[in-house]
Image (cartoon, rainbow, N blue to C red):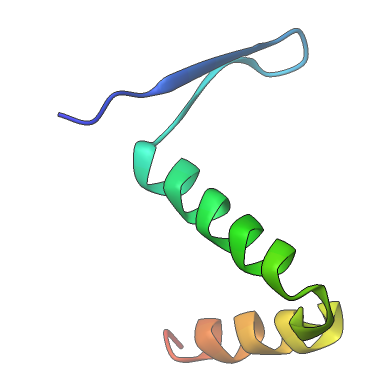
Amino acid sequence: MEKLIKIISAENGESEIPKWQINEVRKRTENYLKNPNNANDIDDFLKEIESDLNLFK
């Protein structure tokens, strides 16, 4: 079982972040630091998410 990191927040109580998500953020951060000019535009990112979500309709 993956080890989870717990975050305590007064607003939301206790949350757990899955190991896969921590690894994904680290990978994306590393890629960004290697080439910040190659980062995705937020509008493109949101369109991609919207497109992916439309697959479930």
